Image (tube, rainbow, N blue to C red; front, side, top):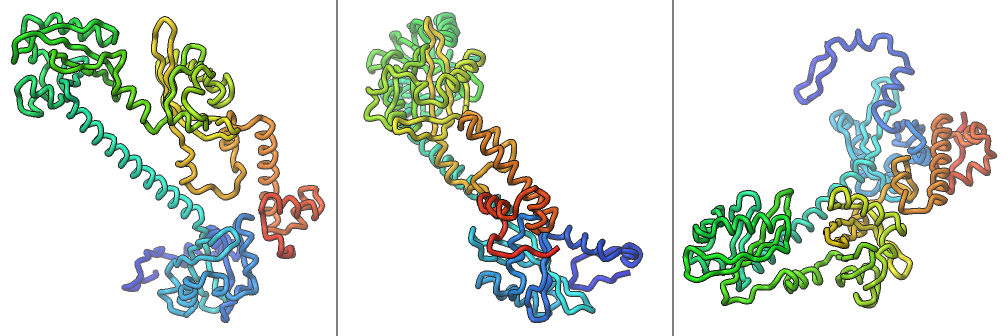
Length: 474
């Protein structure tokens, strides 16, 4: 039975001799393959004398054979190599990360060195950390993007609160189902003669005369389903005379709310048909906004949409069909309209915007349909090109799976998708042949039914293998 040393944190088998009795050399090699992506045989002088890889993706390892191990790594990684080869038992047992310079950028590799007692060679087992590094970069980029979005959200919320509190006329927000006040501005508190914040969570009926309860309840119910309902005139409990209350419904997080404007005759309260605040907000918002008629002709657009499609002014867009700018003509908007008829709203629909110069930009579209004699459609369009550019690209520019190919539907013509499908299948077959022949290109060409020159041409086109090296013998 193995006895643990005080500094050894590993827990060995209880009876290692019995468990490993009968293991052949092939079994030991298979264990080594299972431990890492590739293995390096290092002689006493620190030279790499042989190598073995798990897959053709790591065929670049063979470039290092015949070189000193320390010469294949970046300068800052040389001390780690010296420590692992220096003979210190504890250093050899530790996994150490080093970086190998490569034409496509540094390759991070985690090594563990095993030094047999009766052999002059040391075995360095390496694990390729490029996938881990890429995931870490994606996580970092995503976290940074979330922090930027959170900061923008906080800034927007601050601006909203400042605007809400500084509006000169009384405004309050209530829940449509129970009429509880969620928020009231300073003018509303001043009108009722109460301290700021004291109206929150109260029933809005507490603000009006008891004799007007029925008329206010009836009006709020009508306004919840029809924003064009006539305002109601009522009396407040804390003042003489009457006021006029108008309501505008909206939804948030699946719940319906009402925005109430109280006209006491001393303030200019904007009407629902010409609310300059809303118009200004739509015009200045950073996301593109478009309003179309039932034929998808543009009737309203803001500056952000004009910039997105690279037109000189908003006026040039009026009357043009939105199909000209969104995705595939008559396809993407057709899908959106079908979903709108079924659900009245759509969120985060992926598409592209085509500008007047022939370029395209990936976007997410949220849309609503407003029921009238002739329905109108509102589209909020957010560019996601910056977000995609922030994230590191995957290795290689071509799709690497069937799922990635199907995601191209709607973004590229069928002819291009078929060509990329052919390239993907060709690449996978070449990789399988190289793995099957342990990167022996002569044998791989024979398996694929290609001449060696033709195989080299395809390797160059797909960026596979080290084209300057020689084939390894069988």
